[in-house]
Length: 489
Image (cartoon, rainbow, N blue to C red):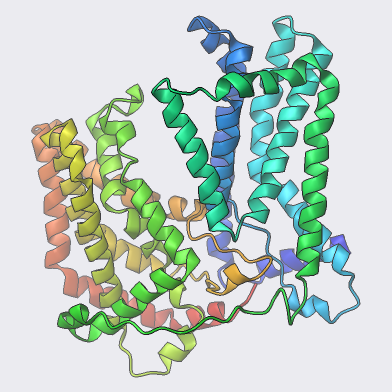
């Protein structure tokens, strides 16, 4: 049965209307995975010696901060790890045991790259411990214990996948612990360090994380199996409807109708809310570059890279999935008296408004000097003039449907922000850096910003012509898009 599930998923992948796009993205993701594997191997091998060189005791120091390592792992899983999906409904009236469906779906999470990646840190680090004179058996059991905690995180992430309040409460508690430790009020790592080091000193304690993983798997299995019914767990949750006017948008004309719908979508749908949250988090991404926290990032070229993300967070997280946000009712829209011009203009205006808001909120970067905020302003103009067009153009070819009700199902994929989004965004980052480099080396750094702004202004000047080209492409891809959105898996 497991073999049949795998065959069905493979056929779904190769027969998808967006097969070529998905294949290219998966190849890019494979290169990205290799990069992170190499980075984690380097971290696993080198962290011991780097900590030793810094005058710290490597093993106690690693044990001290393992608690934050696990919390950050949970954080990244919540936003980036896609929960396992399977077309469940067609199987529920077939002669297939529910146990097989749930075991297969949960088994997919065990093989997730988010679990496998940590092997490349803990295994090399364990080998270094053995090389440096630590007891081999104790070191191996310590490494196994840490990997069991990683897999425990996997099932915790699944269980809290639809419980935002629980997730944010946990993250809030540990963020508070981090602040208390930073200001030397209370250091939780003094207690967690002894706990994690105990798995080396007392090898039999490995049973604790092992039983924890086993218990979480059993609980997750029971939870999903109990909800695996068409009229129960897979039924859509009903809620009272509310109406909202947003009359202040009427001045934008006919496009205001679509903008109002998108605002309602963001307010009511979890996937869309997550994209907005991630765009807000991007506002603070520049601290790594402008605060001098990372020496490698402390150069004007990388600051341009940061400026694009700071001002264009919404563009990359929400705009990247235009028109996929409307995939559930896209066929209905195409039967109405709706022009692509109005539809695309509405998306464009929403991106412009969000970019302006992000740029204003980012004004705290003035603390790092006028040049820091000038970088963000220049990149904001580029995002509004050039990248807004590129995002809409890319939407004509990214035919990935989004199920807005998937967050309600037991196996729903509801992450609005994922690795694919970032990979598609790479070309939009290279052009502003190239323009800045041209002005920087030919004249002076200030001309680098001038070149970026001029490019954005040119984009505004030719907006109507560009929109006509994009509209023609959307019309050409119309039926292929409709076919792709009809696919449910």
